[in-house]
Amino acid sequence: MDATMIAIVSIIIAGITTGFGTMGPALAEGKAVANALTSLAQQPDASSTITRTLFVGLAMIESMAIYCFVVSMILIFANPFWNKAVELLGK
Image (cartoon, rainbow, N blue to C red; front, top):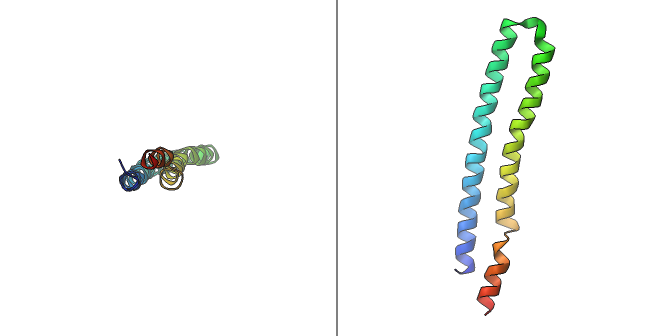
């Protein structure tokens, strides 16, 4: 396996990671906000508790997208397989 193939596979996997890593949190955030708005409509007195819980939940959901972004950046810019490819090509 040459370095070009490793680069191609790394870029494709980084794209897939970013794509799927943003679809899940986007759907989860939409569902969380919809449920929070429904709860606020039913119980307006509990608005401070609902919004506080919503923001904590949104932060946890968004962290998944950030982790997927970090993994894709590692695959592109700090790929651990590059050293192995350089060793194999040097022989």
